[in-house]
Image 1: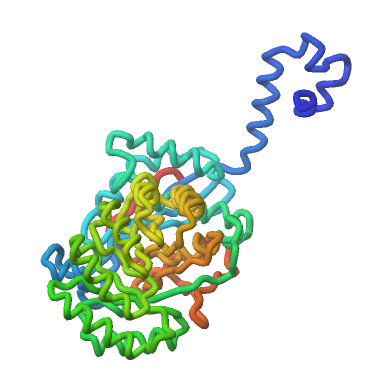
Image 2 (image 1 turned 90 degrees about the horizontal axis):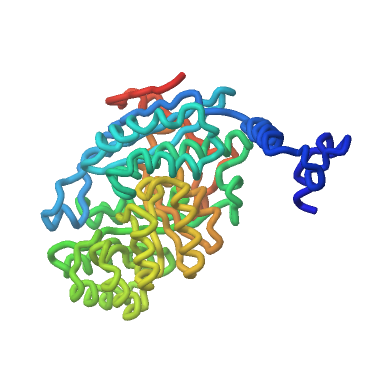
Length: 413
C-alpha cells in the first residue's frame, strides 16, 4: 500500500503500475525522484557575510578569576556575526562570541568554511552543521572550531523562523511566552557590596526577577559577608544565586556550600572546575542547595559527562559555545530526559527562545552588556523575560555594531 501511494497517479495510468509492470524502470524512478527533490527546494543560500565586532565594556569586569590571579579584568567582548541571504531575498542573522581571547580564531575559521554553504537549501540546518564540521574536521568538534559555526547555525534558524513568519520559540514549539529571568551584570566583584545592593534595587525595579552575585575570592569570609549583606538587603523572597566561576577546590566548595545553605539560594554556580564531574556530583548529593554548571563546556559530549554523573541539578549550556541552536536542542533533550533544570548562560537574545521551548520552567540570564549591538530590547516584567512577536530571533544589528566592526568578509552575492 505505502509503496503504491508514493508514486504519482499519472505513472499508474496506461498499465504503468510500478508494483506490477516492469516498464517502470530504474531510470524512470530516478527521474521522478529527482524532479520531486528539486521541487522541494524552496530557496538556496546566495551569500554569507561574516563580521568580527569588538564590543567595548564601560568598565573592566572582575570575577573570582581576576581576584585569584588567573585572568585580567575584561574590557571588551569579541562577537562573530553571520548574515545569510537567500536567492529569494530572505535574511537571517546569528552571532557567537569570545571573551578575552578567541574572537579572531572564530572569525578565521568561519571565513574558511562559509563558502561551503553557497547554493545549499537553508532549511537543511542539521545537514549543513555536519557539513561544516567535516569541512574543519582536523581542528576538532568542540572549542573554537564549532563555536565558529554557532553564528552560522543561529543565523540559519533565524532565517527559517522568519520564512515561517514565527518567533523562533514558536517554530520550535514554545511551552510558555515568558521565562523567569535573573541579572548577573550588577553583581561582579570589582564593585563594592554597597554598589551591588544599589544595582540589585535598580534591577528589580526594571522588572527582572532574580539577582546573582559573584563569589570565589581568596578570602572566603569576605564572600560570606557579601552574600549575607545582599540577602539582608533583598529580603528572603527575592531569588538569589551565587557564582564561584570555578575557583574553589573540593574541600572549599563543600565547606562554602554548607555555609551558604542558610541564605536560601536558588543555586550555587560553578563551585568547581567545569570538567570535574565527579566533584560536582559529590556536592550535588551533599548539599540542599542546587548545584549549577555547564557554561564553560563546548560540546554536547562534555555536557553529557555532567548528566551521566548526575553532577548538577541545573544545566547551564551556552548555545554559541556548544556550536549553535542545533546542538543546544540535542542537549536540551538529554537534560529533559534526566529531569534537570535549565538556565542557559549569557546571550539572552538567543536563549529566551530556547528556554521558552524547554518543558520544565527554566531561568534565563539577563545581561545589559549587549544592548548597544541591537536595535531591539527584550521586555522584562514582573520577574519574567517576554518573547516578542517579531519573527526569528527578533533582532537587527544596530549602527553602533556596524561601527565596531573590525573585520568583514562576504562570500557569494
